[in-house]
Length: 497
RNA sequence: GGUCACCUGGCCGAGUGGUUAGGCACAGCUCUGCAAAAGCUGCUACAGCGGUUCGAAUCCGCUGGUGACCUCCA
Image: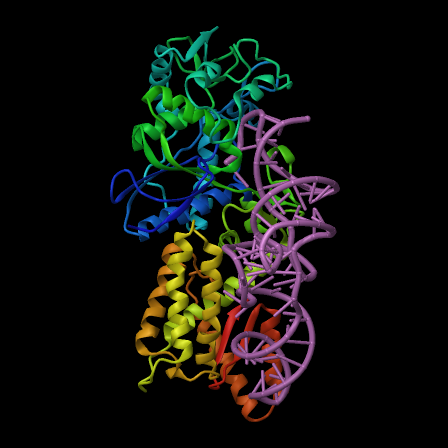
C-alpha cells in the first residue's frame, strides 16, 4: 500500500489512507466564490491541495480532482432580506452577474497558473448544476428532512440530529446550537435556528433566479458541493478538502444533506488547511485585511515592501505544515525568497555536476545523502509534511555547493548517488512541490551576449590590475540590477536582481 | 457566552517523552585584488506555575496570552 497517513478532521487523528477503489482517488475541494478577487488567504487551500493532488499522482493513483466554482452567489442573511452577493456586487460595478463571474473566474485561473497549480480534472460551476441541486433537494424533501416555506426550502437539522449523528466534523452539539442566544434576523421561516436553506425564494429585485418546483429562486449555501461532488465522484468518495473555516457550517451541512440523499456519509477523509493570518488575525474580507493576489504579485499595497513572485508565495506556504496557521509578514516572504533562490540555484548546479571517475567506498556524506532522500517519502506520507521535506533538501544544498566550490571532493558522492540525487531533486522540487525557478523563462540570449562582452572587458582589466575599471563595470551593472560574480575558475556569471 | 485550537531561540517556522529540524538574520573564519557567491564554525529555544516520569518543549492540571468557529468567509 501507499503508506500514506493523513489527518482526518472527522476522527481528529491521522489515518492510513485507503481509497475506495484501489488505484483511484476521488478528491473534492471547495473552490472560490467568484464574486471578487482572490487574495493571499485563498492561495493556501489551492496550493495545499495541489500538493495533495500531485503527491497522490506521484504515488501512482489515478486522481479525479474536482474543484467547483461558486458562481451562483451565496445569499447573506445578516440584513432584513436575503440578497444575492453576486447580484449586489454587480449592481455596484454595473456589470451583468455572468460578466462579473467570468471576470473573477479568469482572474482566479490566472493566479492558479502563476502558482503552478495543476488544473483540476473537473471544474464544475454551481450555475451549471441547478437541475442536479433541485433533484437533490426534492429527494431530501421526499425523505422528510426538508420543508418548504414561502417558496424556500430548509433542511430540518433538528430532525436529522435526532436520527443521525450530527456535528461530528465540527464538534458541535445540537442542543447547544439550539440554545445559542444569538439572534439573527430573517430567520422566522425556519423551524429552528440551526436549519439551513437548500433553496431560497428570490425576491423580485434578485437578478440570478431559476424556476423550481417551489417558485423562482436560487440554490442555498451548501447544496452545490454535495450535488456536484456526488455527480462526479459518486455518493461516497475519498477526500474532501477545504479551509478550516468551512468546517462549520458548510461541511457539516454537506454531510447532513448527503447522508439523507444517499443513505450514508459522503466522505471518508476530510482535510482542512489552516488560515493565513496577518498581524495574528485571519486574513479575510470581514476583517478588511486582505492582500489580493494582484497586489501581492505587483507589490502594490501599503503593507507590502516589495512585489513577491508567485513561486516565493508558494514556497512560503510549503515551508509550513498545512494544518498550522501561517502568519504573513514582509520579513517572512523575503526570507522565503532568499531561501528559494538558494535552493533553486543548488538544483541548477546539481544538474551540471558530473560523476567522479574515481571509484570510492561510500563516504559518510554519500550515506547521509541517501538517508536524507529516503526520509522524504516518510515525511510526505506523514500527512504531507512539506516543511520537513524542504528542510532535508536544504541539508543537501551545502554538499552540492561544496562540490562545485571545491570545498568537497567530487568523489564524495558516488556516481549512483549523484544520479539518484538528480532524479530526486527533479521529482521533489518540480513534480511534487511544483516549484519553478524565479527567473522568467524569457529569452536572455542577447542579454547574455551583452554581459559577456562586458565580462571580457572586465576580465582584461583585472589581468592588467586595472581594478578601477573592473570595479566600475561591476558596480554600474549592479546598479542596473545585474549582479556579476567572479567564479573560482575565472569565469564570470551574472544574476538578475 | 459556548466549542475548539495555539503560545518554540532576533524573525519565520518543524517536532518524536531521552538525539543539532530547516530557513532568514547575526558574528567569526576560509576563499577572493576587492566584492558577491560558496564552505566551515558559533548563536541551543520551547508562555508561567505545579504534577506524572529515571527523564518532558513533547503527557496531565491550573494561570496568563493569542486566535478560530458559533454569521458570508479558503
